[in-house]
Image 1 (cartoon, one colour):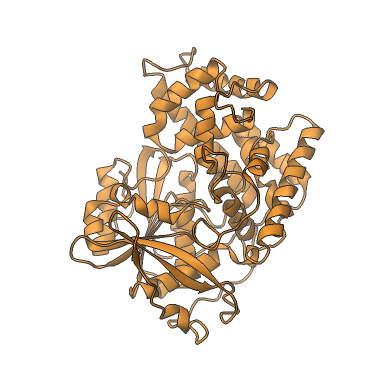
Image 2 (tube, rainbow, N blue to C red):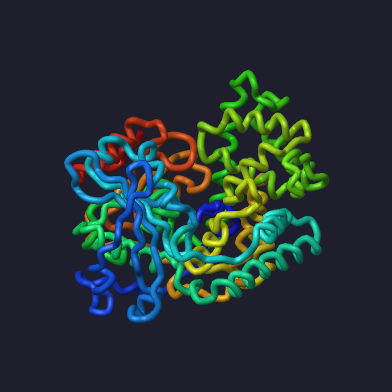
Amino acid sequence: MKRPLVVLALVTLVGSGCSGGETPRASSAPSSGLADFYTQQPDWEDCDDDFECALVMVPLDYDDPRGERIEISAIRLRATGDRIGSLLVNPGGPGGSGIEYARAARTQVSADVRARFDVVGFDPRGVGESTAVRCMTGGDLDAYMSIDMSPDTAAEITKIEEGSRTFATKCQEKSAKLLPHVGTADAARDMDVLRAVLGDEGLTFLGKSYGTYLGATYADLFPKRVRALVLDGAVDPAVSAIKMSEVQSKGFEVALTAFIKDCLKATDCPFTSTTVQGALNEITALLQRADRQPLRNTLNDGRKINDSWLAWGIATPLYDRKSWGVFREALKLAFQGDGTYLLRFADLLVGRREDGTYTNQSEANAAVNCIDHAVPSGTPAFNRAAGKAAKLAPRFGEFITWGGLTCAYWPVKGPDPDRKLTAPGAPPIVVVGTLRDPATPYEWAEGLATQLTSGVLLTYDGDGHTAYMSGSTCIDAAIDNYLINLTPPAAGTRC
């Protein structure tokens, strides 16, 4: 993902070109060089609150399995009833921690599913507690996140270039050995090792956001080893990086509009206008104000709340409708000149801690996306794309598009970016799309479900990022029935 917004999604949350040929699919049994990995027996130890933790070894380079090894950190919560097997989970990113996500299993996975499956989270290679990509200090990342990603002058474009190049250079300096091997295809191979180590004949997987790309890649590599995959908040693997930025930007505009419609019905809505367009104009004016003169920051941490920090802060609560009440209060303060609450939202998005340090979420995000997706090589292409995105998505287009420039300077490239994933021979795979999802727009779910030979689209007419365990009993029941009984929802099911 480019900047912290692109999913890829952060966010993204949350890129591509065309590739020729098919990636060879895995055989039914590991090669002799991989046998030791598939048959290892990790030492699971108690790690509080009924969880068990272990380290699983995988090859740094699957083309050289007898070479250097790296660690994948895993955690599991044992099934409470008649166990079927393991449910691997991934929350997205790339760069999101599956360890942290699994620790919230009691709220993220239904009691019915937890009764039948061990819930297993893991930090993918390059992320968190696994062998991780390291690039910059907290101060370095503060400076990078503060770059004005809505440039008004050639000098501001130069600063984006310099910051993007510095990010890429520092990652190469600190993580050169790991960078070529953090792509999603390698992470999917790690998942197959985890499947075998856990004793499961077929993979049962819940992937959200970027996790849908990880799951679809697994299915394309190992279609005969799929038991059940839920891909919620889908990413379309065949969409180019530039197009991805454009579509995602529009997705955030749709979500912002949904928030405003809801806000205008509330007694504490901070907008002076009584129309949606008028409120959107007030958001635009707030961003322009912060571009001219940063908002007040009562955290006293030295950061200036410019329009970039503000944009990330506005985007973050759009991920979850339950945040909208706090978002209204944060906007009220911002209109009064205090951007602190929105800055705190932005910190959640980029993985910044209160002490000024960062998780490696943003670094891993860049490292994975720059391997997975092809981007234009020069600034002029990004300038044109940002201009187009700004017309289609005035509040978010430039910020998200320019965030991808780091990949133009990335020291390594992936072998097979941006292609359709079809997974021929896999059993039914459920793809979930939310109509007003900001980070992974609904059209991506339609695209992935169509690409997958056995894809089944489940639609949620709702708000926020991803659908499962977000308040829809219809969605939850359909997914639980599929995971437990292997019965996918009927084609065209809408909740």
